[in-house]
Image (cartoon, rainbow, N blue to C red; front, side, top):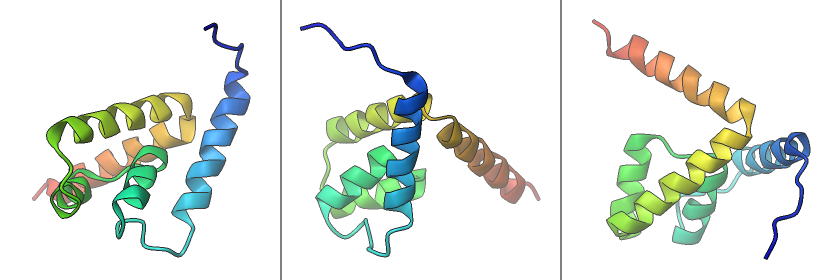
Length: 98
């Protein structure tokens, strides 16, 4: 199987659009395991939320690792996701300082 040539700009736009569509939907994406999985890949959960969802949905460690890998790939493809992650880290860093 050969991979098609992919326009990286269009892929980034598509993934960003998908993430925005999911993030701004009114539903609670944490309620069902399937929705939480989709949100985790497209938008990403912070560490605390992911820990809670792991318990709630009884995700085994291997599944959580797979979710994190998938999210990392999406983040690498979307510049906006990288910026959001950096902003979250800066905010957390500021909040952790006395």
